Image 1: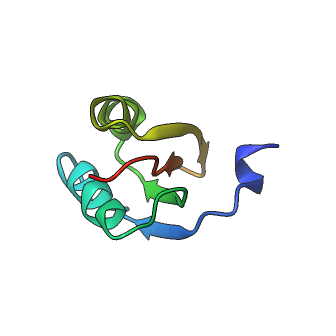
Image 2 (image 1 turned 90 degrees about the horizontal axis):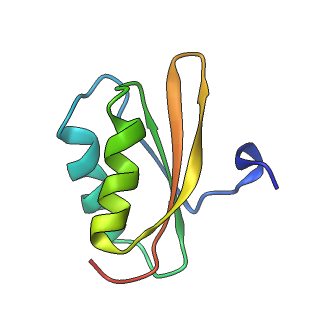
Amino acid sequence: MELKDIRADVVHDVVGTFCPIPISETARVMKGMSIGQVLELIADDPGVVEDIPAWCKATGQEFLGLYEEEGEYHLFVKKVKEL
């Protein structure tokens, strides 16, 4: 399955924001999600390419991958444990 085919449970757009906002927004949104749900984060800050996978590793969440389209990054994170 391709990343573009993933049906996220929650889509959160942080376009126009820069570090640390995409990370803090990811944490805030995921706190309200259930285990097993998938978040699609849409951002245009290139820092998310490294920051979101690092955040996932630090918090024990599953980073499913990302793709870039028209200058926006679409990152997919699966909640696997409570924050």
